[in-house]
Length: 162
Image 1 (cartoon, rainbow, N blue to C red):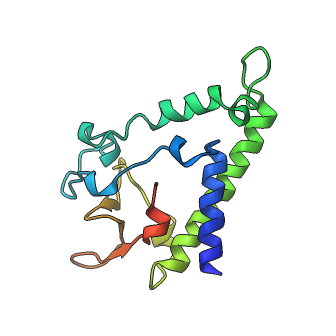
Image 2: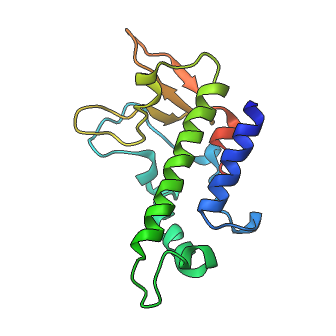
């Protein structure tokens, strides 16, 4: 059951990114990502660190939307967004996020409580610091607790980007 869920989630991600071939996927080598757990500046994320080369994800996705058949379906012939089709796409993104949440919940050892797993943040906010860190890959989810909080490992298959 868990393996099938992870496989379905992975396939859904590929479909949402309009990727048909492995060579066309946006890949991230998590072993090369540099992250600093102690950095608490508001808005900080390992995504923004220049050496990590992760900040071009939006540009890559917009290129996919403009250059693939699936992506072009989101636009009308006059190159404006087709609101109905975009809403359907965003509904699929929400479904993917639910499946990803379920995959992490089921495959990551002792399940986190709802408030722990649904408040995952990769960027420091105004009131709370992020709780997703890349440390010796795979990514860790730091759960709330007294003293030094425990980490919840995100399973390799769920954190794999290649």
